[in-house]
Image (cartoon, rainbow, N blue to C red):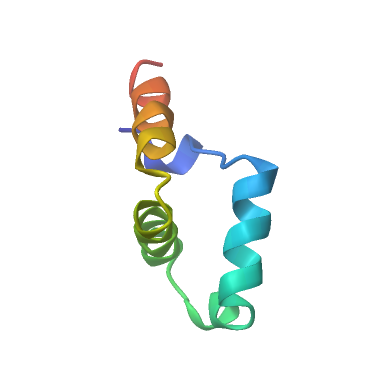
Length: 60
């Protein structure tokens, strides 16, 4: 998977931002932020969208 090239959908970022607020700024490492975002997607029943996203970027 090409993690650096992934771009979440605007609605995903909005939902993630609403739930995590200022905590996003506390994560220093971009990889840790992406891991946290992926975990959020799983917790919010967005697992299918995450797999689709991963498959898309790994096929490039």
